[in-house]
Length: 432
Ligand SMILES: Cc1cc2nc3c(=O)[nH]c(=O)nc-3n(C[C@H](O)[C@H](O)[C@H](O)COP(=O)(O)OP(=O)(O)OC[C@H]3O[C@@H](n4cnc5c(N)ncnc54)[C@H](O)[C@@H]3O)c2cc1C
Image 1 (cartoon, protein in one colour):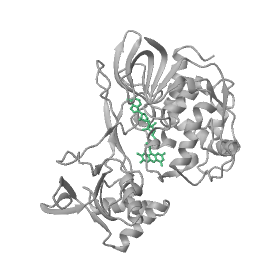
Image 2 (image 1 turned 180 degrees about the horizontal axis):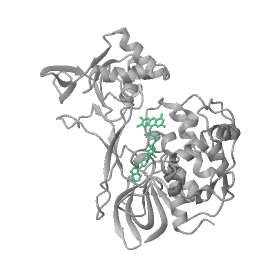
Image 3 (image 1 turned 30 degrees about the vertical axis):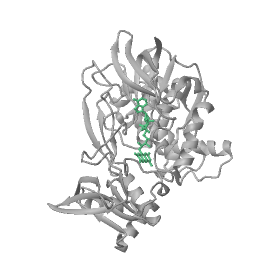
Image 4 (image 1 turned 90 degrees about the vertical axis):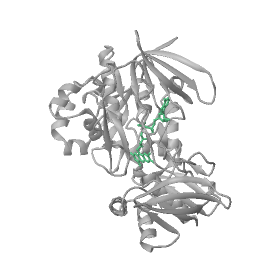
């Protein structure tokens, strides 16, 4: 059976940078004008350090009120707008790698491989980057024309993430299209069983440290209504061309559903937009976002036009979906009143949940619920705040925002990378 010191499960924006840092690219403080100007006390302390920041005493820092996730965010983004590479107060130097393996069930880049073809981020492109490879540098190296302070689309973001394994010579340690199916205790730490996606070939590995970075969308949510399995019902929206008919029911109410409903409307479809939440809640998100995000300005404009081609159905529940003699039917209820729609497609954009069911034979993880303004929601696991290690399963680290309390966006969770890598390397006595 193959053994590794560390195994990372999940190659999204949380797991991928850990591979690079464990692969030997260690952060050092180099300072920057803007960092020193804004955080002079931190700069005074950090500029004395000759060693890598992975050697910091993260526990002591936390006692002084500085969680590692925030420290590294400030070093990476001392101001939110990107003006020049030299504003990043971190420098990465290649050093000895630790033995690790990253296993992920799609390409690296995580859920961005599966979002709609034209989806734009919520945040500027450079908030999605890793500091060892600023987006501005990628653009320069690849001869691209992109504004790093503008929203970035799926294609350009994936191009950036997909480039990273090769750019940092980590390709050999990354297994893509392999799904971890079970994680059990083992005398060497953890025993993982995995399967190559689309085949029956299984693998078994052991490791001493495990980083669980599977993101929030492992298990798609279901409506649990009759007819959900019919061929005209899909749980994934990619692009309007996939929906040749005219009448589309979009079920959701969060950001992914908003995107699908807007794009399909603009492609000329008749939209029935069904959600359980009341109008006020949905409209609050739209009006809060319309100033900064062009696609929210667009949905606001469509709704304000009160066009019949975009019907929003609030506080509405789907009861059943069926293939009638004359066409496909969806039965809805609102306040006890029933309504039947004749439609061509149903798109479920009702999110997914993080999958903790892979763990067998461990004490149960302590989970807490987390929501954000964009209706992302998931269960996070309680961890120590200085290293993001589970509070009840030693040597298990929660990657990205699976650790309790972290914000559900890349800029808010990326800093955990360094505390996790630092903790493992310190335990292994690998940092001098
Ligand atoms: C529609 C949408 C839009 C978003 N927009 C933004 C945005 O604009 N800005 C922002 O900062 N954040 C955004 N987010 C938050 C988003 O979750 C992050 O951008 C980021 O992708 C999360 O990274 P992650 O690595 O934690 O998870 P993921 O990106 O989900 O990556 C986890 C990876 O692990 C894989 N995996 C899961 N289970 C297994 C298993 N058992 N075995 C092997 N591999 C497994 C998954 O398939 C996936 O590839 C958005 C989220 C969604 C859903």
